[in-house]
Structure formats: structure tokens, C-alpha cells
Length: 375
Image (tube, rainbow, N blue to C red; front, side):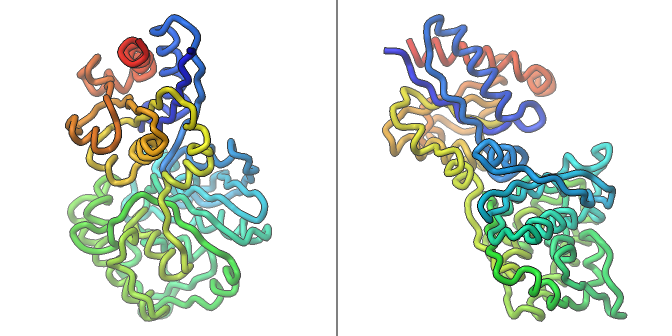
């Protein structure tokens, strides 16, 4: 019987896209097995970079719009639409990869461009907006996003507030009349795999701020600003969501969605797996191969590989993982439904070299999987 392999990894962040991971693994598997293989390529994502591409591959039509990047520069970004549903990836307009020269801007970065994408989607009669919010460069509590949709953010003098999380230190009042008119009748779904609250030690600023370049002082500034922002939004909406799970996602975009857009939060990984029809494709597979750059405790909190393993186990199909590194114990892997993990670090322990040569190393990992799992 010819083995039927379903390869369903996320990206290796900073090294390879999910498509490239699939290609390298498939090449190694064919070399290592030496005979015919049926390979179903199924790259996945969890709401961050690459999620929009998967929506397009699933039949959504890409639409391009000129918008603001995270620090105000003009960029050409896109979203996808089909049948009255718009699929917006925050990282496409407001992600780390959109920062000019990669220069981090923790206080200045804004989600305004993402709001512009949403506004365009609504203007084209899309009545459902799915917003995937991983990979953000921002900590502005979603302020820029709602500004682009018509919200007026005012300081103590009644002047309009500027962009970025740093500006929230001066927020006094939020006026939502124009925004409510624009989004009336639109359903919002936010896809994220982060359950952090907006404020506090596990909140957006202290947990995710450092990834976006925030110093200790910047984190204090952002935390104060987000606290004032939460108070102003609560006064305007009557909704307090600063402690709600997921409100801290993408620097507080989850909070803006919950309070001002009446959004529903959902798992980014599960949404993508539905898009690619994973539950149908896993039936009849001999083996599922998943993975991501780092298999760790975050993986177990609903990341793509964990959700792949869950669905595969339910279908009675064994799962192995390929990763740059793995910090999970064998017991942790087994609890997630992953039989074995094969890592680049086991071949090349230097992280810099491993990332630089991820493609060829993954091909070697594919050969290892073929020899150990398909013999």
C-alpha cells in the first residue's frame, strides 16, 4: 500500500513560509522513502502572517487597497472577499513585517491601516468581516482601527488624538456615532489564539510589548494609556472588557472588537483548519506531519499543530511533528497527540545557522521521518 501523507505545518517564523515547509518536508520524505508516496500538501496558519494567503487558496478573491502602514507610510495592502464575507489579516497592513526597515515603533505603531481595509470591505457590501489578528506591530488597543472606521478619539481639550499606543496617555473621550452608522448590520469575527487580557501582568503591554520593541519605560507608558483607553471606551459603550480573555490580543485589538464592534472571538487555528477542510482531508491518511518553528508550551494552548493533532487523533490517524526546536517533554507531546518530534536543532544546534539553512535541514528531517515512521 502506498503511504498517504497529509503535511499540515504552520510557518517557521523568520525562516520559511508554511508552503516552503511543506515543500522541503515533501522533498525529504520522497528521498528518504525511495518509493511512491501520496502527499497532500496542506499548509496552515493561526491567524498571523500567511492566513490571508490560505483564504485566497480556499477560493476568496484578493482585493488591493492603498492604506497606512503601522507608522503612517503609504502601502498597498490587501484583503479577501467572497459571497459577502471579507477576510482581513491585521498583519497585512499593521504587522511587524510592514515596519519600514524593520524598525520597531512600540509607541507610534497604529492599526489605522487595518481599519482602512475593513472600511473598504464594508463599502463593497460585505456584511461579515473576519479579522485575523496575529503578527501585529502595534499596542494601540485597536484605537487606530476604530479611528479609521469613524470613531473620534478626543483629548482633554477636545482635540483629535494622534496615532499609536503612546497617544492613549492623553485619551479623554470616545465618540462612536459615525462609526456605529458605518458598521451597522456588519458581523465581526476575530480570529486569535491568544487569551491574554488587555491590562495587568498578563496583559498586552507587558507580555507582547517587548516583542514589538517596548522598553520597560515604554511598557509603563503603554499600560497607563491602555488603562485610560479602557476607561474611555467603557464610558462610551457601557462595556468593560479589559479583563476578558483575548482582549489583549494584537496589542488590544481584541478589546476594541469586543467592546465597540460586538465581535465574536474564535480560534485562528480552527478557522484556518475549517477553510482548508482539514477534517475531510485527514480521513484515509496514513500519517499526518505538522509543525512550526518552536514546539513549546504556547503550542499546547491552541496553536495550529495542537489543533491538527487533536483532529487527527479524533480520526484515528497518527501525528508526528517537524520543528526548529522542541521544548516539550515526550509526555507533553503525547498529551497533545503527537507521537514524535523531529527538530532542526538536533541536526544543527546553532540557532542562527539553523534558521539560515532551514530548508535543507527540513529536507533532512523529512528523510528521518520517512526512515523512522514509514519503514
